[in-house]
Length: 287
Image (cartoon, rainbow, N blue to C red; front, side, top):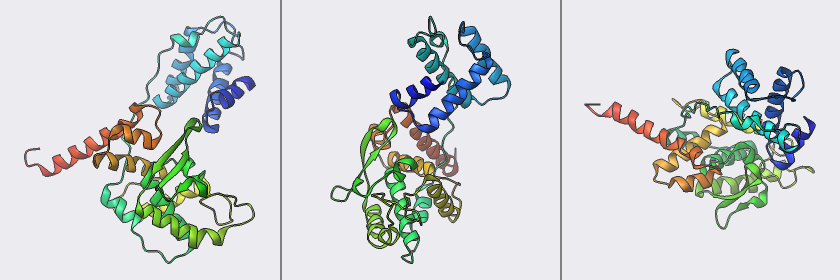
């Protein structure tokens, strides 16, 4: 388990959340095997997954556990702990991909067009919301931004995404103006000895955390009539959907979001088509 954890962290460079999930899955498998991997075969692996299904585990959980098993048995085989790799014979379980909820353009406009008194918290929150919607970055990527990651001359931010892959993401005038207000009139008032170069700060001067960002997004959207209850990832979905509805190329959206596979990005085309169908059903007399 310790060697597998090191492999996931340092060779695969997986996120701490994914590492924890994989180690939990492997622990459950080893419990099923009474702590021994000798003699494990495809029948044993399928039996364990069948038990998980019978216990009511979701398709998403089963898909993750299948992926974890395949990674683990491959690792054990390369280490010489298994004579062959039974995980190669394990089919890939596919998790359902429900269409994500998104704001329509009017709701997004309402959420962002909120008057401010100029308080540092309001300036920070506005800059965060504008940047999330303008760029579609993940909340972890936003929290990790430093002041120097913002290129005001080119209107882009430098983002370190999954797998430590760096990308540049453009943003527009409203986000730039909100960032400037925060950096000039808000951030200097909250800087403490430990603030470092963090772009967005908490009230105590430290780098902002993902929980704070989630709370502020939920709070802002509660004031928008008819809007779904979304967090930062919902704004990411919204940004991607609005880009495609505005005519953006799917490959360009893939690059902006930092998706490794185009298949991940294609879900937003389904969102746009479904919204088009809903408008058609509502408006056309012979729908």
